[in-house]
Length: 538
Image (cartoon, rainbow, N blue to C red; front, side, top):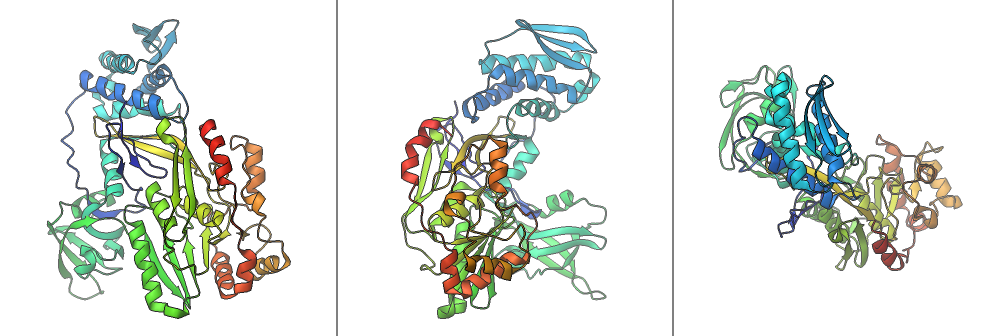
């Protein structure tokens, strides 16, 4: 078993060799960056010994870590059967104690079935099956090794949940770059007819220091034009080792002479926090949770405090559309606002999956009134933060039911430098309920029959809102579709951002009496549920 892991919310990486490491979330846009990976060159051609090691380790990882018990034999048979995605003529089926491999229905090989949970033996059998099949299949014989690996692991993961996945060598390289940061210049782009449009320039990056601005159009990179390039190729050319230079030609104004800009690449972690002043309110949006989210959020809070000063009336933490990211960053973000108490706990099948996270430090915002905005796009780490601030009574949560992505994934690196992302735990709100599938119900619901902010405020004044605390914190069987649907129907989810959310938040923070009506009390149920959660394993 491999010990040690990257921890993310949805992604919590276990590297079972002894060290607990941190990683970050998937990037939500193409960033002009260079991964500082030291991955070796990919091997040429299919090698049975190399494949055997890869499959053996992959099977063992799933058997050890996945949140539900699953036999290695089930995984391997499904994986080998998935070779048909490359050549539909290939068939793999169990016949009593034999595994038979066929081509167009004609048996070409049979193998004794190993012990159901012998990962090494099943890895060897999988590799041997591929070798034998390649003699009878031109499609398999001409397939790159990574195509074969991907076919097998796609079959393996079809036996698991929808959040478990395989990333091949190149995709995993991109994932690691997104989690760990980049060597690059720090811009977001989109291809247009005239060239490469700069959608945004990230703060405190080489691009900003070199004078690039939003809406610049890049027409050449290191002397070569960008016409006909794909977005992936543009990204590749803009990437490079830290402290190396990339020369760009920029069109800034129509009819003007293009500008030549030399940008020195640096290590970049995507900016996830942004701040906008709304009168005497601070509107801070988090787009994800990566290694620098907490530090970036601290900067935005201090910026708001310095800019607005003593007139600061409240904070709006906007988590709408935030798909999540790092577990430790969700915890640290929550700690900026909560002085004491449980933030989240995680529970799964593996003994190390039972973890408890609590707050115990000063509120950076000094208790200033706070509203959290969520919607159907708020998932995982953002749901942890919303539930923690809601259950602690620190903030009023406004919007619609959140996504309900309440599982923790572990990312394990494989010998081919690919990755397995495996669900290994579920997380629970401070009041004890599991968030998976049910999501977070807001205190103030802005969906359903209401269409205007004033309608919502009237419901608060009448006592129809906020939603009852026992309803919000109700612990249901998340495998019961009817129970989940019934609970979420109390505040139907909304995928698109709606102006009503921000309007309600602003009105609440400008009216202390109304805000007090909307604010829920602190539930006192977490400690009583700890024993139950641990004994249930999930």
